[in-house]
Image (cartoon, rainbow, N blue to C red; front, top):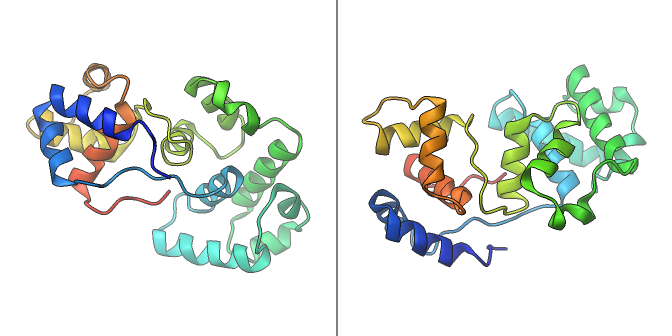
Length: 205
């Protein structure tokens, strides 16, 4: 699913920023798309933390062998040993169990997200062990298709802004904040095109 706002956002960004205009022209027809159910997306993000993509794919494959349809209930129905056997560390087992409990206990309000702000959803997600602000921001961009997320701590974003706007010098946090203000209310879209300038292949989150 591609967001309904994408063409409008791209047109407005291109009209106001020649750098983004060039990037948008380089990637015609490309757009952010949402994949996956929220619990599964968050579960997979925890599985993949701090390990290589190849290792993460291997562990995730074993999780799916154990749980062909991962749900909060099926995760809670597994023993720690079963989850560890998939390749999860003891700490990650704690994280995925905490995530499942938050869903089962109604502490994650998926049905209310449409009326909640980005900050409110981030606060809800970061209450789960193992989910930090960056993970929550990636979730808002890639799963929820929120249009105006500006992930200040993302290394790729910092590199792209350095490359295109700062003569190769990594921008300080305040400069990055100010740069993002130019692109409201479409900062997710600007971020996506800046990522593409570093890696033409879109990331699946």
